[in-house]
Image: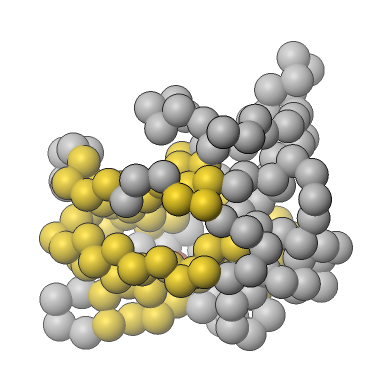
Length: 170
């Protein structure tokens, strides 16, 4: 497994979520951004709770021209400068949750169009209301080319997306 460098760059996703009654495609193009890449402006976007490690950006940001799978905006893991000890403050586990069960159909994943310090593997978990794992995608690779991955996690309350380190670490 490739080690992640100190400056881990964001992985980018566009998420297709559905409830029991209708499907919702979230492409993030209706978010109001104040910068090319910064904090997620609406942590309750699309009827879901997004943890504070999510960033929102547009394809104008250097080396992120490939980031959006549709339109020009995307979400990524929070990119933060390294701590004094060389570790990163970014989370290796991003979450999306809701107080009622939903179906997580799938998502499009890509890493920025750069050569260094990239997350190259992901693992996606579907959790119940108590945080127990109901579904586990297994580890899969991502590249700089968009790849839609189907999950069909049913009746879950949270999706957790892990990148390139031990899934139990945060």
